[in-house]
Length: 102
Image (tube, rainbow, N blue to C red; front, side, top):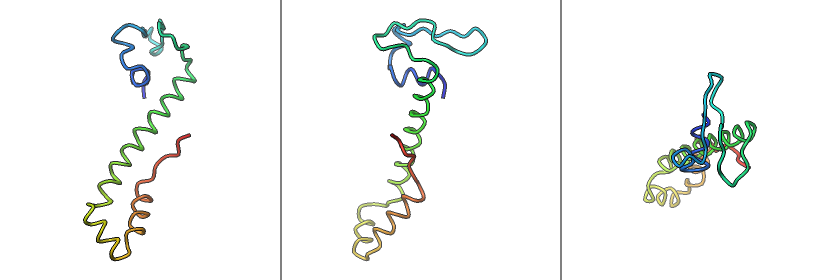
């Protein structure tokens, strides 16, 4: 996850309206100007946001895969009728686990 993705996720138009100006002097991208009311994040904060964003992306993908694996509502109703629904749901959750997010 790079600084541009992190900042544009946290502050949607910050690079378009020049609220934040980035620069790269050959040693990586950094924040040159910060014109937002929030405090300027340091590298530790940017890294923490990157981890949160990666977890969110991962969990959203897992939820999409779970939704497909659960089956249609008709299939789920049939599983409930036959008493296999709870086991199926637990199997899908184990197959597509979510990351713990604080």
